[in-house]
Image (tube, rainbow, N blue to C red; front, side, top):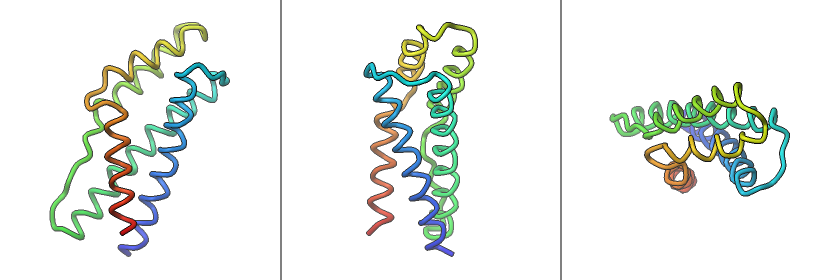
Length: 124
């Protein structure tokens, strides 16, 4: 069962990393369909939530202690971005996403670095 959870965590990490790369690319100026970016934000949020849940489950079973990944602020900012994207034009989408993600604490880059570390630790 432990191996199954590890594989599932790694799968969700891969999904989160792919979505993060797309979002970074978009925020750097690459053109994407706005519906694709919305889908990417939803998928990114879902994958982060799954990673947190599965890691808590894994660490509780393995270490007897639940360790939380501090992503609540980022999830809230993703929700804020998705909400705002419903009311503003496509031309403002990039700045909305960039601004809302910048309000997250810890920053999205820090969370992705932590998730990268988790992936390395689970691979050893």
